Length: 416
Ligand SMILES: Cc1ncc(COP(=O)(O)O)c(C=O)c1O
Image 1 (cartoon, rainbow, N blue to C red):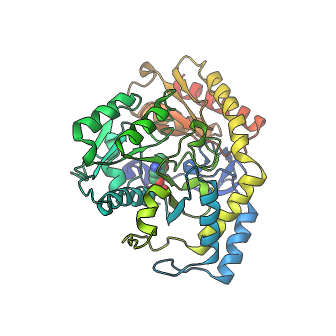
Image 2: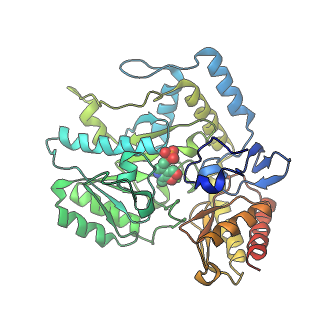
Image 3: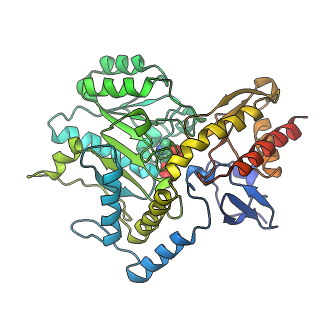
């Protein structure tokens, strides 16, 4: 029967007859309705850092729902789980006295950070600082600002002008950022948004020195440096906020996904004292912005339990160890003649890129991904020519071996 469910990023003409229904999940495995298991090679959409089926999170949420199911945090309203979570994230964030603004996901966090950056400048008496810079190839979600600053062209195409004051700069060359700021005029630039490792663009680690250099350029020109750690946070890049391994101290950090391992939808922005003080120090200013579910107590309970697991099992450190092994596994897949490039080694994510000769038309890469799935591994097609993986941080050596074998077998079966 034809589905009524409209799938994001899908051509429903192709998907409507045969959606791939996931029925249950445990650890790194998900199961279809026939009970066949698949390794969740993508941790859902880069979020299931602690793996599936953690009853500790389920119990925490159920307990919170019985006590205070839901309430808002607008005006002076608050609740204990949201307070505790904000305090805990503030202590972990690599910035002075971080304040935490909660949202329901990554895209809302990008909108929040962009509006906050602009309002910061307006309240500081520089209302012309509205321009937002981002990197080519970047993905910042599909809300208004995220669409407007998207570095993946296809995600802006056809929507008309979304954000006039947005400029994209080269992915790897810090001098291109400097040139853009000089061209536009620092007095007109509010912020520079950057994913430390570009995820949806296809798993691209930064060139050595790039992030440090752009952070310096932002500091020199006063432009706010916003790290988009929606994918990179909570262990994916081996630390808490996805920037510490480069010694970065951004002005704002957007997060989501791994903060609850996706068990419930949560995002947020960590805001440094530089920005927050304008709003928090007397006489202060209100921020007329806020999603209904900002600081939702049951969602915060899920995050607190998830953080307990990440800390107790030292999963950020484990991710650092496993990133090398994942890279080696992908390099082994890369021995297949159809693979031209392997990306990985910076965080527990990576990609294999298939050669143009192996992809005579656009549909072939999707056929390859389906074949890999038939061989028991869920991967995503990103960048039009790459299979991308980002497994749960709990993945074991044996499961990595399964990942390597299924990927190789799936590619071989589809292309032979
Ligand atoms: C780097 C980055 N920023 C923002 C987002 C948007 O997050 P959401 O899909 O929760 O709105 C994503 C989603 O994948 C992302 O990868």
